[in-house]
Every structure is written in C-alpha cells, then in structure tokens.
Image (tube, rainbow, N blue to C red):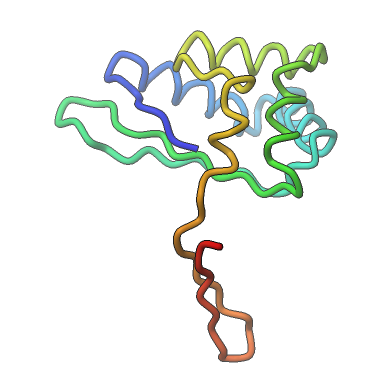
Length: 127
C-alpha cells in the first residue's frame, strides 16, 4: 500500500510510528502485537520515500498475511480499542481508511524476486 505524506503530516506520522515501536511504551507495543496476531499479519514494514525537498513523501506499507483484503476489512470493522485508535489516527493523519483499501491490497503483481536459499532464484510474473 502507498499513500502521500505531506510535510505537515510527516512529523505526527513519525511520532505515531515511534509510539508503536518505543521500548518505553511496552503496553502500546503489546497491544499492537496482539492486534497484528489477531488479524493474521505476520510482517509489517513501513518506509518513507522522500519526494519533496522540504519534507513529506510517499509512505509505503508492506504487510504479509494470508488474506490481506480480509485483514483490512477486519481492521476497519474492529471495535477492539487498539484497532479503533490505530484506524482513527491513520484516517486523521493520512486520510487512510482501511475499509477503502481492500481492492488496493489485491493490486496486480507485476514482478517479484526471491532467493530460495539453494542458490536458485525465481521470478514471479503476473497471471
């Protein structure tokens, strides 16, 4: 998933991500981990690709889950306190609405590469 981050949004967004990863906020980290386990997310990575000279850029979020569309639907519909907090902050900061991203999560894979650990490499192509 990708979304634009304005220069004004960048710092509050960074603070939210820091709050999720801050060792001093153990309760927040544990709520986040429980949420991701419940939703079936095994990997979540977030990058900021700078595109503007004075801040801001493109946020790129990578999730691994068996069914990413289901994950986004469940996150959007969840009434769990942490999920509501997270979804609300994403909507406020970025205009990010998990309920509207289901189709985006199933975008067309054009190319992927993975080293299988045996020295062989495979390239995936779109169906």
